[in-house]
Length: 346
Image 1 (tube, rainbow, N blue to C red):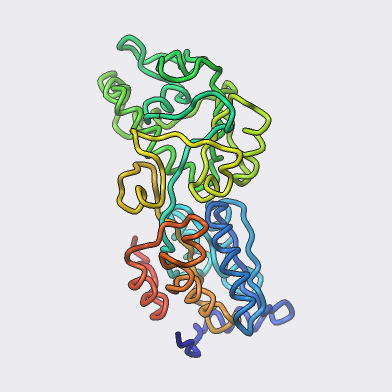
Image 2: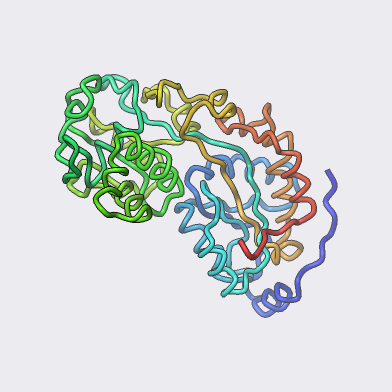
C-alpha cells in the first residue's frame, strides 16, 4: 500500500494556518455508535503499526457526528464522521454552508439490525415487521379502522408471541439505526397489516401516511435509547420482559446475555445479511473531510488502512467482530486512493 503526499486545498491551508495555536497531529473521529467498535479496532491497530498517533474515536450517534463534521474546516473540527446511514441532502447542504464542500463517502461494509431479549426471558424468538408496527405505532388497524394503539401485550395482536407487557428499547432519533428501523420495520409492518392503505383511503397523502406509519407511541411502551448499545443492554438486564434493537455485531459479542429473534423466518447472521436474505440490514459508512487530507497527519493513511483487505476484508478483524465485508471493497479502496468526492448536487 503506497501513501503519497497529497495537495491541500487553499481553504484548508488558510483555515488551519490561521488556527495554528491548536493545530493537532492526530485524526479525530465521531459519530455512529454502530460503527464505533469497528473504528476503535482500526484506530488501535493504526496506532500500533504506523508512525502516527492513535486516532481519537468518539460516539454520539450518526446525526450528532455529521453535525460536528459539518461545523467547518480546520483543526478545531473533526476529520471523519461515522454513520450507520447515508448522509442526507440537508446535511450536505449544511456542510457546504460551513465551507465543507469536498466530502469523501466511504462504505466499510454491512451490518444487520437484530431484535434481542434476555437469554432466560420470555420466548421472543420470531418476529415479523407487522409485530413491531402493532406494538409501537401510534395508530394501528383494528377491525378495519385506524385507531389509537390499544395493545398492551405482544400477544394482544399475535398469539404466538409471549403474553407479557410491551417493553421495547429502540434507538433514539439521533441514531442512524433509528431511520433504518423506521423504514425497514415500522413502515414495512404498516404496509403488511394494511394500515397504510387504510390511511390513504381515509384521505391521507402517501407522504403523510408514511409519517404516520413511522410515528412511535409515547405512553412508555417504547423507550428511546440515546446512548449506545451498552445502554440498551443495561435496560434489558433490568427488565426481564424487555426487547431491544441492536446491531448484529454487538449481539454476537453478547450471546452470553442475549437471545436473538428471527425476522420473517430468517435468523440474522453474516451469511444471511451478505446474501440479502435477512431483511433488516444496512450499509455502514464514514465520511472524510477532504480539505484535511495532507494537513492532519495520517488522515488518508488511516482511511486507506480502514478499508484495506487486511482490515475490512472477509478474514480481517472487522469481519471477526461482526462486520459483513463489502463485496465491492476493491472499488472503495480505489475511491479512497483517488480521493473521489461525493457529487455536490445529490
